[in-house]
Length: 402
Image 1 (cartoon, rainbow, N blue to C red):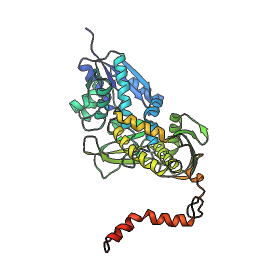
Image 2 (cartoon, rainbow, N blue to C red):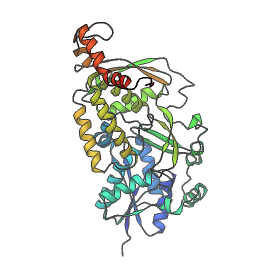
Image 3 (cartoon, rainbow, N blue to C red):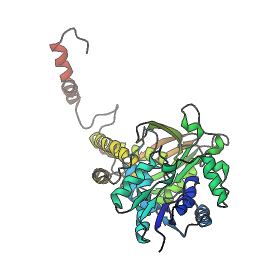
Image 4 (cartoon, helix red, strand yellow):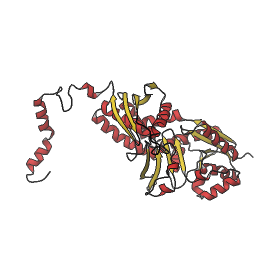
């Protein structure tokens, strides 16, 4: 009788490495699946595959998904200028639904009866994975060995050593998730609220404030809300984000620590590095100020706040998410132009913005200087009418401070 098959969502980190011998001990033949959303180099992907093979997985599959990640999710996060807590660009939460879906596809292709992940009971990722899996692959059983057994770090390291894998102790102390949209880093310091992580644990911005860079300028071109050129050079979005990230990271821009509400209802804290995401959202928002009306921006901001919450909380498969994306697509028809950015250590500054759809250029008036759309008498009447409600309230309530 053949052994049952299981597909394991595999990052090559401590938790997912530990899952392989545990699942094998439960009688499964394990196929590991790494859905690469742009966070791994070719050498890192090879190392992940070798770890999988070393621990006894029968097969390892890498799914290249960076372009898919941009097309299905990131372009909408850019269109919505989505930052959780006005700070964090959803580096991790945005990836999980797609990773779960692609892992489930592999599970179905190999005839597996189950899919497994390496999430703990204390974090958001277990919710994100399982909502997507239960929605998209309801016939698959879901196993979560780390969550269910709650092993200690020493116990995990001991099991891996017993399976002839000496996992680097320095990597075991910090949990790192790296993707196209940024990096998250969790460790002892982020379990509290007082301290930051050590300088040598930052991945992309390490020593950026020790070895400072001279100021630099760059130009990002957007076409209907999509970043298409960097310094006038046409690039596909994935390449553009990757190159921009490398440039901006040298300045320490996009480094932060996010403190917010978890899906489970407790407060959580995580360090992150999102150089490209931070600058792209900043640039895109400024371009929208030039090309959209205030009501377009107000409506889109409200929808974007909801969309960001849904993506963060694992509700990407919720039908309302598709409705929000339709609004974003409609809103970006005139969001085209160039945004000029000045980079300084720890800070990026929008120095200028131009667009063929500029509402500023379309006006014959100049703020504070010249009237071209109205007369002085028009302005006088407008000022009276615009404040009329407050004027009437004061008249009806004499002596009451507004």
